[in-house]
Amino acid sequence: MDVILNFIGSVLGMTGTYAVLFGGLGTYLLLPHRHGAIRPRAAHGAGLIAVALGLLIYMTYWRPPGLLLPAVFLYVFGATSVIGAVLTITSRDPVASALWFASVVLSTAGLFLLAEAPFLAAGTIIVYAGAVIVTFLFVIMLAQMEGKADYDRAARSPGWATLTSFIILWCLLASIATLKTGEKVGTGIHHLARNRLEPEKQLLRSRDLEAYIGSPDANMTGVVRRAVSPMSLVADARLAEGEAADNPEATSVLVHRPNVAGIAASMYTDHLASVAIAGALLFVALVGAVAITNPRMPVRPSSSDPAQRAAVGSVRP
Amino acid sequence: MPPTDIFTLEVLRDYLLIGAALFALGILGFLSRRNLIVMFLSAEMMLQGVALTLVGFGRYHGNWTGQILTIMILTVAACEASIALALIVILYNRRSSLDVTLWQEIREAGVPATPASLISEEAEPVDAAPGPESYPHLTPAGVEPAHPVEPWIERRS
Image 1 (tube, rainbow over the protein chains, first blue to last red):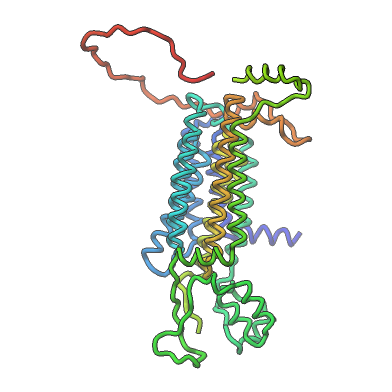
Image 2 (cartoon, rainbow over the protein chains, first blue to last red; image 1 turned 90 degrees about the horizontal axis):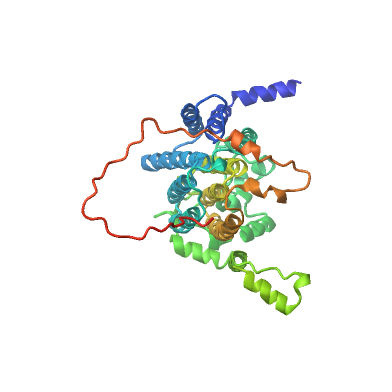
């Protein structure tokens, strides 16, 4: 009993719980279905306000990066992507859904840029906004009922779906928010004996892993070196100007590799098998899409007679 | 001393939180919407959330693996979109509707069916635009040409 009460207390003490509550309530009100006697317009207004409130509380978990401009862009792109996501799944009109999804993709591409992935940002915009959205719009134009269809105005058990997905969101939030951002982990040999037996104080960067384990343990260093291949590193650590090479406390600087060349070098050495598998997947999808869109008339066992089969074939539109 | 990096654990957490929100909202859309197109858009949105997480982790750890996995996700998303849209066109040609509940006879054994009457009962009423409808009045000008009056069908049935 005490355990349960403690759990409820800690849940209610977490700020994120209220973000999830407001967000879930707002999304439930925004989802298309009948809200009893409440007029749709009032429900939408209340839902939008609740979603905005939930997003504001959610944003208190975000920490701006050090510089001003990246911080502003991070908040803008993050808020745009979450709001766009809410409106994608709650729009009554599939065309509006597709356009809101395009805004999600664009702001995600902006976040990719902030994480120093310009090639991926361009690729995402080209593939998603350029190809997928346009194809979606083609299909929408091809297969759209006049007016607003019944099924676009009635969600399928919206209450249970909202509950499920926002419980998942709460669990993700609770596990992410407790990431340890405390003191720095010491590196090098002299921290070895102390650090090895204790749990890590924060998430280690994989490029610091070798220094963290230390050179005496040759076996583990070899494993780490195989897992974190030098080809896959984004930046090389070089000694700063005027530092002596034999000084263990020398400051080093990161020299970044060019983005596209680095991705290509890593992709065609470390991840060659994945490239082959992706190519095979694309080929299978091509064959599958062609096979699905041009279905053949099934040949029944009874119509093994060629003349009858020809007759069946000519009936086919 | 290892070099300091401006992409700290706090910034990684921002990316994870945004990715988690996109993923959860994608789940919600996939579970609750009934339009096939919106369902597939929600699935794509879940992929976007995962891609954001991967890029953030790759940037934090300082290697290309996250970006390369995201390129693989783009590949899978392109395959998924092509097959899904081919399926949507086929399904629409069979039933003339994008409603996913029309296909509930292929559900798993033991799952109860949703009666079709629920659709119109639960549907949100359409708000009529306030005010009387008004269209501009255009005065006809010139001589009306002789043209055959023939019925035409806008859409195939």
